[in-house]
Image (tube, rainbow, N blue to C red; front, side, top):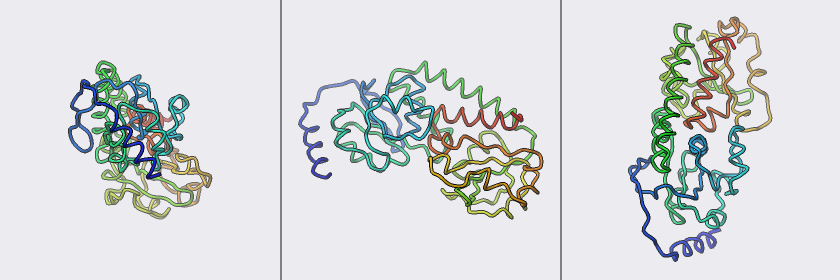
Length: 298
């Protein structure tokens, strides 16, 4: 593999450099000059694939598995470039991309990719909504799709307004992630905390840690906290793995005693949307739509 990478790097560096128009954009690692309107792109970040697809930008190459069903048509047309964690370097070199985008799970690949073509890290992490919307604007700038980006931003704002209205004055919520029989809770400062902060949705348990993987909890904890609403993310469903699903895990005596269960106020989100492609413009709108529907009893 290292020999292949060395050969690929040598071939790339041997290509004569031609002057090309560039634009300065903000990335997760600071401002970077990138080619303007690149024709061929390799993308190793599913949130980026999500937003680029919404903008109408063709993704030339991507990981073989994007996990989310609404991006399957993108995966079908793109060249197979391996996985997020193990990119196929030879396939990337053969593609000869004008720009490579990494982020999140693939962010540590940026230096390797930069030896093949201009590469940027577009990770979305600390501020999912803020960074997600910033990435939308950045991609619009890179690909000359500013008008489409503005249209999508307006659509997002409208969906956010509707979701806020749906959750207003309806009590507290607890966000949990199931992983087979195991359960973790996420608070306002955690990975999915943007749901609380963006929607002004009160937390049922304010003391939850901000750990990346959430805080491991028991059914007794949920019973004690007794949220008005329970928002559920099924990790196994998100990654397509077999095992006990969230509905089976939560169907027990202790859960039956909670206000959320008694009042049929358990909202099961599309797990792939929020867990896999979180921060993508489509993902965020789909999640907000799920929450709106759930709180409206649909």
